[in-house]
Image (cartoon, rainbow, N blue to C red; front, side, top):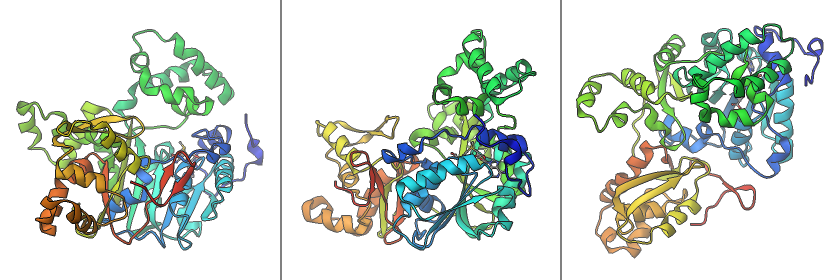
Length: 463
Ligand SMILES: C[S@@+](CC[C@H](N)C(=O)[O-])C[C@H]1O[C@@H](n2cnc3c(N)ncnc32)[C@H](O)[C@@H]1O
């Protein structure tokens, strides 16, 4: 299993956690077969450029000279996705840093298979970012990495040193409450595997333990949550259950984590409805007796309360330097409305339209790979808001859509542009709040989508 013998491994200046590096040399995570890049693109939600531009840069981020860092880039998911989105911008660059040579070799092979030449691969520790000669970045991705460091606070501060003044970081840390059963199994395995000498022995023990657990085990009660990780191979089982260095965060701990580095939260994110996991007002919306207490809490307290109810297993969030002024999210005449999820495209919208046989049936939208069904009861097929939704093509600005719709709809012809924007916002705002829609400024970048039939990213969408 070990691809590199320990003594052959290149020593790194700041190698605090040999044991963690050895693990990722032995078992790169997530396990990826580079050949799969011939037939699919892994799109990681928090790394969609239009979403980052929308949330972190008021939709004004220019893609053409972007510099992106993937710190602890692993087997390459986010790196490849950024590089694909930036393929047509010769002055943009993605820099990958990881201290596992084995993981880096997999990420490199994936890039080769795709013919991507816009990635710089650097073997090194993220704690040394400033001394790696890699420059400063508009976007830093560090997903599933900092919670494996000896001193995660120092890791965050090291990343901040290479963040441009207006830059955005996309971080993912484990969620404490959502992973309680994982830590109970980790502790069980620590006791059972005291004499185990290799990682493979520990994985084998974990595989033997799971079916033997008594019904009282929290893991047995929550096993559905971990199905995916437990079926994708030994690397994932080890990462989940045998990790030698793994800590999780509560929301108040994330607040402290950001504060010590003088950073501020932009937003937690998740796949589609996952954002409601951080919305206590939404969670208790049917309980006025509770709601009136929640309304008195500040933003962080509300987030903490929401986490206690929804128990996310991971906290994905964007942050900026503390002095960056938070921008309001609104729709303008020059906004191009886009779908937040990379896997959502105009084709899905057409699918929704086809499903809506009845003109007066409430609008119900199935989005995302998990196909969550969202009902927007106030709109039906005939409503102007729904008609606007079907016009979204990720190319035309709101003003351009207005001009086109005026030609074919007399109600819209009677509206001013300002009235049209207000109407569009009635559907845009709820869908934005669920992370289904976002908006970027016309002319800042090209949205590219995965075409599952042609197995490639396409620039143009047919609606
Ligand atoms: C769980 S994997 C996540 C990989 C990737 N970010 C993803 O989401 O697919 C953690 C990665 O971080 C790397 N890593 C951990 N500590 C690091 C450090 N101090 N410097 C560089 N890489 C590190 C490991 O080698 C491993 O590839």
